[in-house]
Length: 241
Image (cartoon, rainbow, N blue to C red; front, top):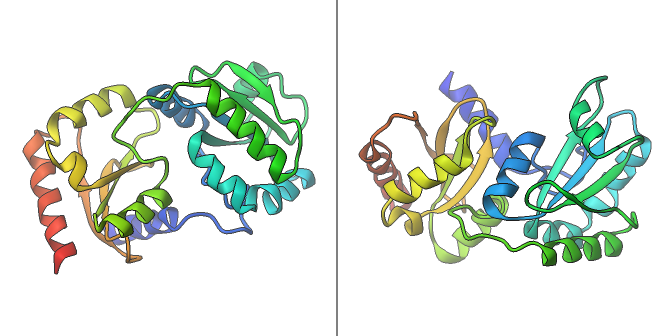
């Protein structure tokens, strides 16, 4: 079972390819989690309402959302892929943002209030939209890197391990963040931290230069601080070997 979990997480952390829905942008695929993360971090969101049967959605993914300029700009916001393929999927969000047809891209502030809709479907126009909405929202400093991919890049440069906290999408992110800020001590800076939703709460420790995880640490809400900290210290030793 653990091997299957690690394989699934490794696939998640490898990032999307150009052929996948949504292109190369590192979308958060759980919409409610993405909006909760935006609230925690004080970041704008880019909500991409799309469906498998939507040809123009696929075109956006293949072209603008696979453009390196858009991928780079997306680190300044929380990009959220809202899958509307099946009838009833994310109907609450479609109603909330008055989405009548797809593709639709809605930009919101950190509290989910709409700021603007997509004006252009080309890469320069989307980059301009992102820059505009990001400039209207005051971000807050948190433990988390904008994405796993950026954490790994920073880890390579700084020669630091990456710790990916895989959390239940329905978890209280503010409470989790406060607990970690209190419990981790200097491990807040010894590791580069990224946050991902997943079915099995755990911390995945990565050597940023390698494909395979160094360790997977199961976590529980009632764990004492030293349980996670000791496991992190042991995983960090593996990176030095």
